[in-house]
Amino acid sequence: MLRVIKVSRFDLNERSTDIFKRVVEAYVETGEPVGSRSLSKLLETRLSPATIRNVMADLEEAGLLYAPHTSAGRLPTEAGLRYFINGMLEITDLPTDIKDDLEQKCRDKGVSYQALLEEASNALSGLTQCATLVMVPKEEARLKHLEFVPLSPTRALVVLVTDSGMVENRIIETPVGLSQSLLIEAGNYLSSRIQGRTLSEAKSLILSELENKQQVLDQLASGIIRQGLAVWGGGEKERSLIVRGQGHLLSSIQQRDDIEKIQQLFYSLEKKEGVVDLLDAALRGDGVQIFIGSEHPLFTYSECSMVIAPYKTGENKIIGAIGVLGPKRINYGKVIPLVNYTAKILGRLLDLNGEKND
Image (cartoon, rainbow, N blue to C red):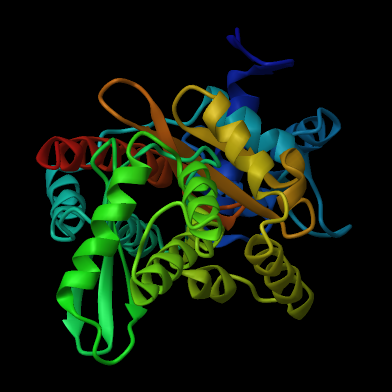
């Protein structure tokens, strides 16, 4: 007697479960439709191709498989992939050497928030051979300190520290002959105004004071202050999304029409179309979230999937999210623990950076 396995709304016996699982595993490995003759060689129980075809027909009727062409083998539907992930996928822990390598690459980037996110994204892209996205929520952090550090006669580094201890740097051009004392004066003025405020709050206050001449400041110092605010305020949107490894995703696509769909997806990401909704969905969930194809509007036409997880501080405050973007046949068993562990690394290192800057 065959045991029935119940997952979601589908009831499959052991034979159907075994065949379905083999179809999905073969699809993840090759991306090609799987036929009955190929399956008969993969199954531990000897079944005739005719019996396998009958089972696959039942799975197709249930909405778990489909045939891309009349005479082709079968592929899993999006519902089938979801069923497989939720009920059959076995997630194993990452090997110690991969964990150590990931953590070391991120630690090497020091306390720069932007550099840490970029390195984590690059490392994850290399390990998964997929595109990666790192997203930062819209909510602005409260600020703690800002200063100008001279680099050359015409350049200065603007260092911004948030109340959580994150350090970010930007370079600005400075007038020839600008003294270090004026840079210090501009930095002291800004630091006294930004403490405990968000960037937008501080910017409104400071610009209002400058316009109304409420503070007696040297004209050059005022110009540096405005430029320092501009370089942070103007870059806020650009820093909300980091995309790396687009080439991995394009190299996995073979049809020209599909390449154009992927290019359109990246265009949408650059324009931030749908990204806010995706980030909100990731942040609402608990742990790793998986979006398969049309489950999210952003991926409906690109035939892509995303595995994404929020990264948090030790106080369980969500800072942002990191995810992997790939074809629907990505190796979920490998990608899910990689995304999950990378998110934990980010949270832990950002916490450490915060402690160093308290």
